Amino acid sequence: MTIPTEPIGSIPRPPALIDAVARRGAEDPGLDALYDGAVRDTVARFEATGSPVITDGEQRKYHNFWTYSVHGLANTAPDGFKIPFAAGHTRRMPRLTAGPFRYRRFADDFLDVAMRYAHRPLKQAVISPSALSLMYPADGIRGYSREEFIDDLLREHETEVRRCLEKGAHSVQIDFTEGRLAMKIDPSGHLLNSFIDLNNLALSRFSANDRKRIGVHTCPGGDRDSTHSADVDYAELLPSLFELQAGNFYIALAGEKDRARVLSFIRRYMKPDQRIFVGVIAPIDPRIETPHEVRDRVLEASEYIPIEQLGTTDDCGFSPFSDDTSTSRDTAFAKIRARVLGTALALEMIGKR
Ligand SMILES: [Zn+2]
Image (tube, rainbow, N blue to C red; front, side, top):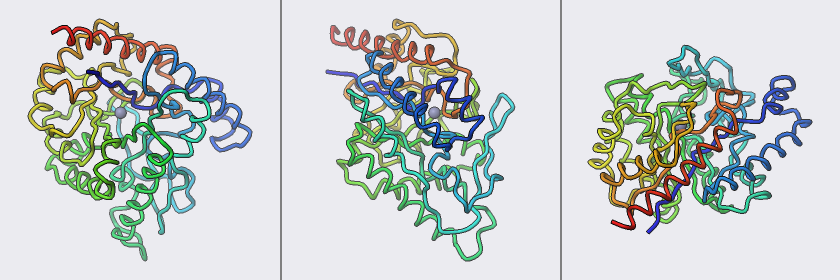
């Protein structure tokens, strides 16, 4: 018996890297040594936490988990979809201005670099087709229909996931932070259902075996210690979420006000072939959780989720946006260590039952 434990993805970048990107731009080739050093240090420190699965900390995912694949595309304008955070700031994605739609970079490039340094299995997060679908303007693009765009988007996404799987990623996580946000933007549920359908079109291109290594991450967002959709009830999201044809679900839970209620909805709607990684660490909370606290959260979850289907994770990445300095690297790794230790403590207690 085991309880798998995995991170979500991002780790705060070293201050020297953040400064250099701000001064010289993210793509200055002169930054290669800094990026490489950041990945090497992140992998080493990740392994030192004992986490059985690690990431590259998304050190090179500029500027964020949402737009890394399209950042710098010539056929975009900066005035796209706005993500409003509760703290009052917004993050903005590019708007597509012309076809065809192509990724500028694929996440397996990050995997190539991390694999040079890693001794543990590496997880790779990629952005969902539904998030990128928001780049297509509501009033259309002359000569490039929405249908053509969706075809191109699904192909690019499939290529990215397939390359990560083929290169030996332990798991590929599709970041779906816009799922809960969708219920805020459109309480009728129409937008959420269209996101689920689109992502299922992508997932259906993979075999059942591949899908065991593919997961979906949901959270209320995490940037500068703030969220974008924590006020949306999980009950609005979870029934649709578990319709996604993925094998793993990484669900933010530690930061929820009423965890037991969320767990009861998970129990009601999860499918027998789905593994549920519950969040036991809250990255936006500056306080470092103790292993005993984590243990108790895992034991609580085990009352709702069969142990064969239970895993643990962090609620979110520790800095999904590359310039977020609200959490230090030391704090992030201390929290990850608590996740690993607390999960092991829970397993020990469950084994004695
Ligand atoms: Zn997240």
